[in-house]
Structure formats: structure tokens, C-alpha cells
Image (cartoon, rainbow over the protein chains, first blue to last red):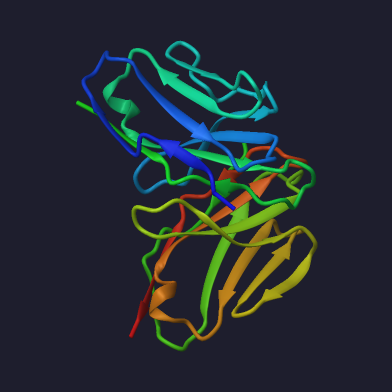
Length: 115
Length: 111
């Protein structure tokens, strides 16, 4: 079974440029998460989707960040414009979303460097 | 604001010994508790989850939960050099909520 797929794996951009990250969750997983991980820190939740609905986007900086999951499968996270402080690893995770103990599977992440 | 606290380490343990990793959390409403392992440059992978008070064992790993003290721990028996990694404690309120992670403890197993 294929895991969570993310692309690109690495991205280097100059500040003020836009950037987008793509995630394909594990087949059949209705719940999709985007996390941000800074160096030496644990992941921080940005947004959670149940199918195509964003059910928790309270931690998403909506002035520059946006996300979508149009058909309830793949998802895209966008930053426009990027700032130096956005340099981090962006992790996508998915789960069946059925119980309190179910596992979130993480993708390999996209490492963003903003110059 | 939910908080999860971990000692960042590094925690150095001799090969074959027991490694003990600890975590405290602030939200008494937390229902599920997770330990993830993260190797440098890789994404987190789940080691164990626990949601009832007491111990839960899986091979060389034992998770311990004390909700009254808001305390979670992970014991690794017969530590191996391959166990050297950062261990992240995470908690969840319920259902399919997102996880709140601690900063992680860097564990080093000395051969």
C-alpha cells in the first residue's frame, strides 16, 4: 500500500514569491492534515480536512496561507507571499478518522527555504 | 492553549539499558496519547498510542499513562543504536482531531 505522497520534496524561493505544496493521502483516508515543523520543534497543526471540508483551520495564517481539497482526495497548501520565517518542513498526514486511537500517517514532507 | 512538555535532551543511554522518556500535558480533556519516532531528515512514525490509564506493551516498548498526573512515558527496553532518534510525544482531544506535539526528546544510544 502506498503511503502519503508529497511534492516537491524540496523548494527554494525568494521572499515575496508564491509557493504551493501538494499532498496525496493514503487511499481511503478521509481525514487529511497539514502540519508545519520548524527545526528542533514538534509539528504544529495548520489545518484538518474531513473529506473536502476544512473542519479545523484555526491555526492557519489566513492572510498568506490557503489550502484546498477540492474532491476530498488530494490537497494543496499555498503561501503567497512567502516570508523568511516560513522556512520549515511542511508535513501532510492522513488517517481513517474513525476513532480516538487511529493512526495518522505522515508523508515525507516538503522542506521550504525562503531566501 | 494545549501544551505538551518534554525534556529536549540529549538523553544518552548505554546499549542494552532501558531508556525512559517522559512527557506532561496541560489539557485534562486530552483522550489519546501518542509516541512518534523521528530520525533526522525523516518524517514522524508512530511507535505506540495509549488512551487508558496504566501500561501498554508492544515488543521492547512500553507506554505508561497517568491521567491524574497528566503524565505519559515511554520505556524502551534493551536499547539498540538504531533507537537513536528524536521521540515526539503527542496528545489529541478526541475523534480525528489534530495532534498537539511536544518539542521532542533527542535519544542517543551509546554502543
